[in-house]
Image (cartoon, rainbow, N blue to C red):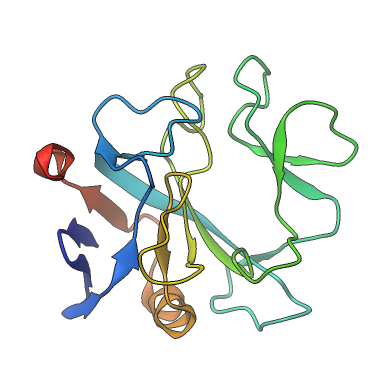
Length: 166
């Protein structure tokens, strides 16, 4: 899977996508809204079982207590945590459909470096042209197709050369 200036190439297909509203950066920081350059492996898949069926046997259902830690000073930074969790986090079971299906990457994981950024996911977009907080996002039907065909360990390449483009 390779990010290009016009979308993502995967398995001989091209999918339009959106990236972080902070653009693409080689020096990603927590909260900058940027998509980090590099080669990031798919290490998991999460889905809302009350809204969709599992796209793969290895997909894990998102429960009502599931959160993602974005508290850079915590030992659980950039990992799945559960309620109650008093530190800064993202709710995975959202009211909107953005996280109905999420592919997780190994960016700054499993041993996270503080402030290097967390939760670089692949998920559903809000709409074309509406940037994410650093994730890569797709149209719902495209995301589903990708999820049905992807394997654990698939590499997501975000080329450094894209960081220099406006």
